[in-house]
Image (cartoon, rainbow, N blue to C red; front, side):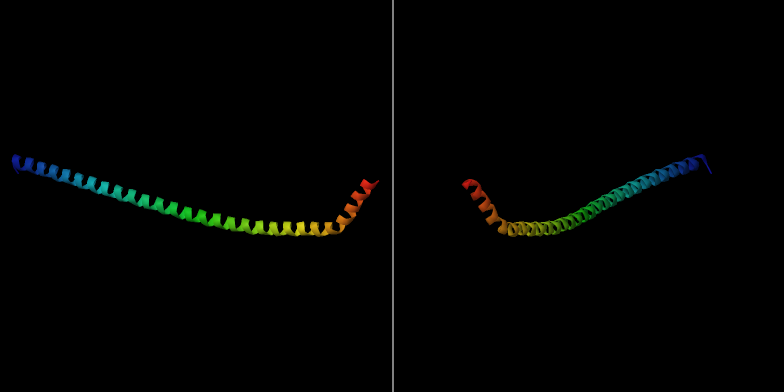
Length: 104
């Protein structure tokens, strides 16, 4: 092999190496781009899932609170009714006591 052929082979090898490097860089950029897109999709799906879960938990808590509030309200209404009914008989005694106090 002559000197010219050796130089030509070296130049061709360099050219092929440059092309291989360019192809590798292009493929690497494509892989990074796909990875970023996938990561963005995963993050969005995670946010969506966590938001849906949070809304479910808020609804459950609201429902439980409303149920408890209804119980307390019923108990309060019952207690008020008992006090009112219990006071019904004492009103006459109280009115008479007040009138007697004014008369004395």
